Image: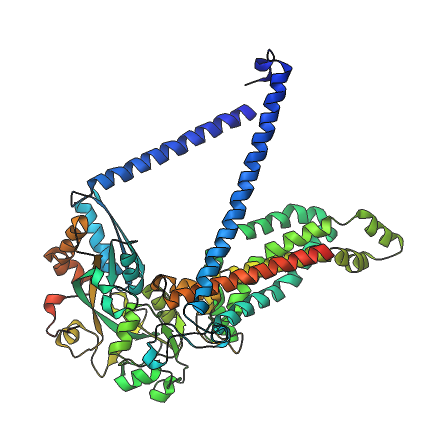
Length: 290
Length: 307
């Protein structure tokens, strides 16, 4: 009985060592392969608004280049920028420019504009509000209006669903939809997906989502009569949109450069980008400088 | 390997070998203990230096951090920022954990009495494994169940929008049940049989024995269990974060959403850069958590010494 246990222990230890050796072996191989641009590992962290696009592109990229391993994580734009500066991530995704975030040494980073994303105001599907003027929107998000009845809706309390302060979606929304006005305190949810889930289930809830996250579980609003459609965004009549950046520390090299080039290739820009609800930069008729 | 293979060795050799084993064993145990002590001290030192930087490097006053409700760590100085008032989070943490204990403690103590005194066999066989199972469920599962069942239930039948302190402390109350129950059970079981028998001999009923002899005798163990439960509730992050609604305001009713210290840290930690005021303020919150757990442990020590 005891002997049997001993053998089992030795067997398990052997198995453990075997796995460690195998995996570290793998790790080494990848390190060696970093000189070749289509193999190695990449860690991409940041904006949850951009996450579906980068995930989809990473899957396609890895099918074409089985030697490459790309890990895509969310966390928010602030996280993306912080981690790429600290060297914890290879590429940081962000909806905001690096110099807009305090405490980030933007001179270390090189940003590549990948595409544009629109941000929509969404409410609980049972709330039959279709349009808000910019003033009404500001009143709601700054806490002046606390009941939908005050702006002609049903007698229902307004429940604000915010994103945390480091979220690029929140920063963009505050800048272009609220013209910089300070938001009232509301519930915070740490990712776009969770925010949508809460909005879709909570009566009277209102929040903002990047367009790729918008689906029929939530009710999408127009601002000043303009719906967040591709036509309205590219012509500039719908104001709430953001450039999507991918940041690297220094100039992109090796696999980072290969992957960034792939993100800008027609393969991604003409299929994945529009399919998921993003807008290619080339389609924009208006530009924003800085 | 076996004893026989050493039989030809001399006695002195065996004695020497025994001595070396003795020294080796002691050294091993000592070094392991040292590692744990050094680790604890290093952690306390690290969290303290980081946490105190808010006050001594960023010059935030104690009053602002502990008594202000203004949390604007990213607001530029032109607009009157940055401000790092953590009072809403401290209140949120205290409120949910205290309320959780208030719900959980009476329930747990009665369950412990049931298991030890009223139905020892049945309790041992069915209740014990059930409670161990409860202790083994990961906190994310508690949070998820709370999010899917409890939050809509509160919204539809009690009021508010569901995400609330009520949801938070109910989830916590279930989570800390096993801690309080198992410590209380052990304490009740370890009471001398004679006391119980003496009480019976004096003509007490079973309930009187439990209420007047067993529970007072087991008091220190039960309090230890409650404080341990409180400590666990105070430190829990994930499950509470999923149901409490994460709003940076002081709650005025149990149906209001709130935010705890732990969820304030996890919400923001990714966005901040090392060395910034925002980052240091998060470390100060960690220090506050650490301070509370010191306080809890101290309470347990004092109670068990007196008990």
